[in-house]
Image 1 (cartoon, rainbow, N blue to C red):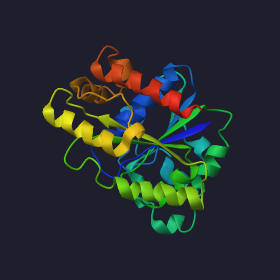
Image 2 (tube, one colour):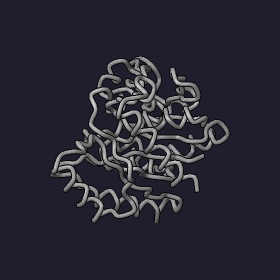
Image 3 (cartoon, rainbow, N blue to C red):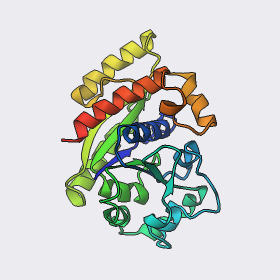
Image 4 (cartoon, helix red, strand yellow):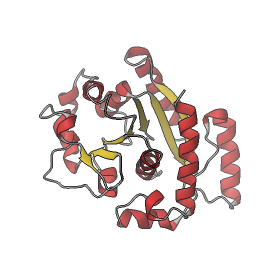
Length: 251
C-alpha cells in the first residue's frame, strides 16, 4: 500500500482539489483508494459530499476515541472511500499528540489488505498532525500555484521531510511538485515555470493543471471534476498527471 500525502505550507494552492481528483482518477484506473482528510477545513470531505458535523471523524481517531475503520465511508466513486474530517479537528491540541508520531501509521497498518493507495489531504502547517502523517507516508506531492510566493515555505517543508525521514520514517520520499491553476498562455506563467524548472528540475512534473472554471463548479456539485466533466481541461490534466504520478511512485 502506497501512502501519498499532498502538502504545501501555503493555502489556496489547489491541494484539496488535487487530492480528491488524483484519488478519484486512481479509483477509475481500478485501484482501491482511500482519501484521508486531516485538514480541519475538511474540504476533501465536503468535495465528495460526506460532511456531517455530528459524525465520527479523524478528530476521534487522533484523540483515541475510535479506530480509522470506524469512520471510513464510501463515496459515489466506485472503489473510492474517505476517512472524513470535520471542523472539530481544530480541537486536537499538541498535548493530544505530545511525543506521539505513530497514530496514522498504526491505523493504516490495519488497512494494508484493503487499499492499494491512500491519499492524504494535509493542513497547510507543520504541526503534530502533519508529523504523524509524514511518519506514515511513502510519497510526498507538493502542489504549487504560480505567483510571487510560489516557493514560500518550500525549504522548511523539505527540511521537515528530511528530519522525519532520518528520525521516524526511512521510507519517506519526496516524489515531486506539480503546478496548479496554470494560466498557461500568460508571460508571467511562462517565466514562473522556467524559474520552477531551474529550482526543481526533474522533481517538477511535466503536467500542469490548467486554470479552469469547471473545476470550481464541480465542487458545488460535490463531484470530482474527472467525473463531473471528463472533457474539461482540468479533468484531462488530472488524468495526465495521475498517470505521471503512477509511473513515478509505483516503482
